[in-house]
Amino acid sequence: MAIILRLDRVMADRKISLKELSEKVGVANVNLSKLKTGKVSAIRFSTLDAICDVLDCQPGDILEFRRGPAAENETEVKE
Image 1 (cartoon, rainbow, N blue to C red):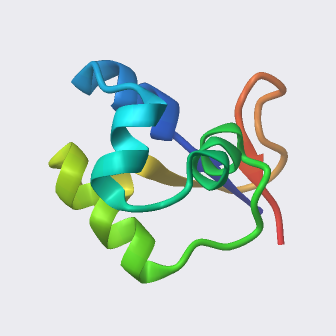
Image 2: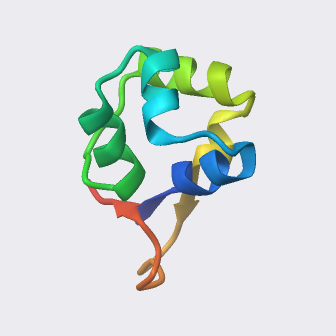
C-alpha cells in the first residue's frame, strides 16, 4: 500500500510557490518541502486543513491511495 502525494501538482495548478504557501499556511518552508517531495511519514490534520484552505482544495486532491507498488516516478509515503 502507498499514499501518493500530489502537493506539487496542486501547487503548480494554483501557481503558488513553496515560499508563498509556507507563509500563508504558517509552516516552515523546509517542512512543506519535505511534504512536497514525499520525505514525510505523517502529516497533522491541522497542517492538511491549512494547506487545503490556502489552496482551495480537498485532501483527496493532495493525497492518493494506491494498492500495490507505486509507479517509480511518483512521490510516495510508506508506513
